[in-house]
Image (cartoon, rainbow, N blue to C red; front, side, top):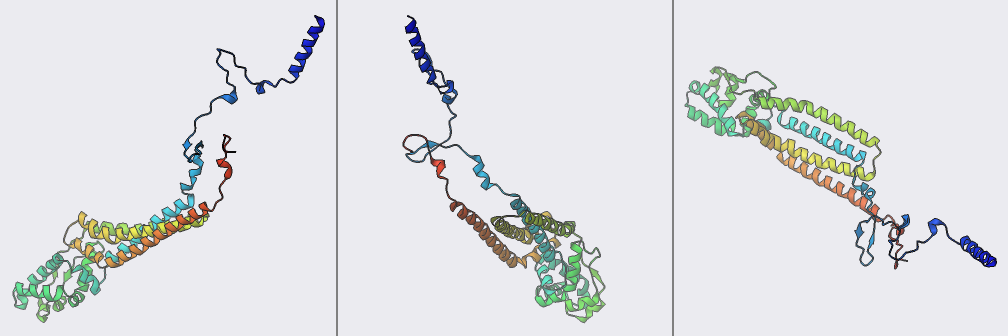
Length: 338
């Protein structure tokens, strides 16, 4: 009995010497009992399935790979600078075209192209000088309408008077517009008009135009200053080449929109929608004379901006496609993948 006990003890010692550690020990299934799960056997969370054909496997979603769609600080600064500079450029254009009075023939012809404005001037001058000239108001009115007010030579004669009217309606000069007898001579084409008393044209100061002119006066320097400052900040942020190209493209698109907005939409439609008085229609007439330039510039800026943006996007894609792929990300521990 003693020898047998010693043999069993030795066998037990040999078994214990080769017994694996607790964490390496395999669980022994007991009939009728629920198998115990070790930490390594806990079920893993389910991951998103991606269909790779017959090799379908679970690949974790990596949201950090979506950072390519985010805009860097330089790109945001370039976008803000583009909008600010385009607003400054558009406000300068509108101020130069419709809120800068002059006595040139082209400006006078553009304003006199409106029939209601011609009618206002014709009515006052005809009523004041017809009796002194010895003609009827109908005859003199027809002469002014057909020969003077609706012709380019007549627009050159009316240039100084139209300049005063333009200054008054935009609030640049509050003095009334008066026409003396000597100024009526080239208008009515008769020396007898020198004896006609001075008349005052019924031209009011239009508050809407005065407010817009004042707003454009400070909008141009403020928007331009902000745009230049933000542009310098974007340059100091050391942008990438694609960001510079995209910024130039966005600037081109912003300029195209600003030209259409300040060169056509606001002066032609928006102002007259706010104030529809007779002399307010002088502003759309002044804006329409440069409409071909506005449309041409907007087309060039828009197409150039789109080309630069597409170029920056295609450049980024070429660099992405030339990047070597990590083969290890497609490796699997399952059967059939080696």
